[in-house]
Amino acid sequence: MNKYGFMLYIKEKFPGTIDEHWNWDLLENILDFALLEYDGKSTEELIKILITIIPEVTAEERYEMGCP
Picture (cartoon, rainbow, N blue to C red):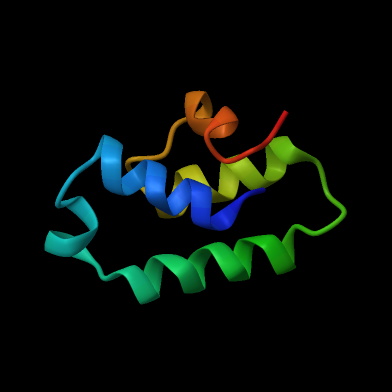
């Protein structure tokens, strides 16, 4: 997964959302956690945990995350 590409996608697709509700460091920490926790597991599992944590993320965003 391209973490920085995904963060840029969130910034462009959902302007102001992270700034209003979270902060960029928190989002980056969540992505780091998910990448470490789900390393070696299926992409579907990674997407499911991100969908659970980040309301703006849907299964359709998988391509923006650099996931096949």
